[in-house]
Length: 172
Image (tube, rainbow, N blue to C red; front, side):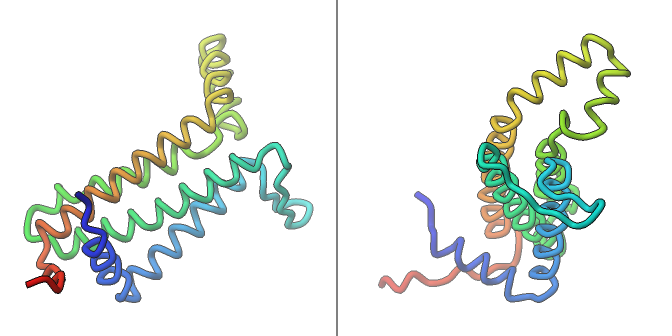
């Protein structure tokens, strides 16, 4: 069973420190701007424009959710890396998960990466581009699921491997 009080305690412990709060806001903002630009929701030329077509609302929501989870997991991984009792190599899952989430969240078929795939791999690149274009939202939802799993594993590892005093439940 999930101890939600412990989750609240760990999040409060991490985000009570301004350093982790600012890093989370920075990672969220950066990944959100990058994803919105790659997904063609945000334009910088000829002037700053932000537009969400009605048929692309689900893509926007998944991009916002992924950016939020990436910011959360990255700050938690940084906290775990600086407060762990064990080897620092074992704390990299949150950072790797965040990088993977950001990479898979970028609309490959919408950016110049898609053109590079086509020119580099020919018909195989066209097939890959078509696959990524068709299953773009499903790939993002799968990535969000992976980031949620990384969140729960990071909370578990912070409680297990860091010097954290678990809150009392108030029961005798």
